[in-house]
Length: 283
Image 1 (cartoon, rainbow, N blue to C red):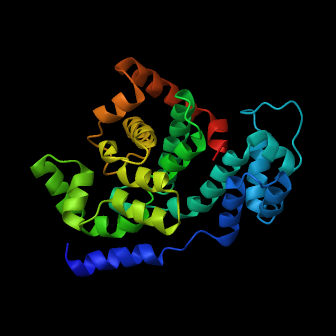
Image 2 (tube, helix red, strand yellow):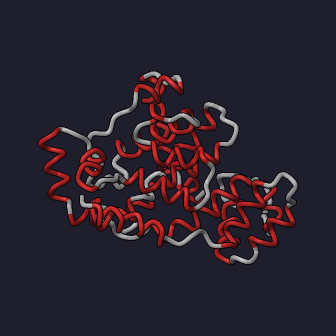
């Protein structure tokens, strides 16, 4: 790909909107140990859609609370600040990821469903191995393919060249994407995460979820999202054009101390998770 096109792609990232100020404010509150329930409730109530989603989740069968939750403050106590942060980000990025992405052979809502699935599996694995904040894994899983929203147009134009490279060189779609375009979607996603001022561990996770062995900041987090991504694709969730030739990184398996039986159990449990509608209410 020539330098002019590469520059144009980078400009597309620069042109992508920053997170709305209200969303940033909610995230800041959830990350501030001195913030109160009242602080968070005041901001959430400014967004009617987010308010109704939080109340719906708090009253879902997933949590099984014995009485109806009627206020955002009650819901926040039940859900916790980190889950509220995850829902806030999900509510925002869903608008970017629900369209049709022809370059990746993804129909309307495919990328979003795939991202939800990866996020839910990432959260489950994170809880299973007891990492400090499972919601960080959820966000990494949700946004790991956000770069596809930028590269879609270019992949569509160069689709034949990319597929030919996959077949002739026996490489993955990701490797062919990078060879033909000069960037792959994970690298573009990393640039978007940097623009949104995400923590370095999340930026790394989005950028390296296909190659966890290169991670230096939080290899455990990157490995969680890598394995969740592979499971999502192996299950055929919005598989698209790049869903072939997905394998588990031996580095990621060793990092999380997963053996083949663990993976089989994860895949089986993941099927149950995505069949459970209340799990998707979490996002």
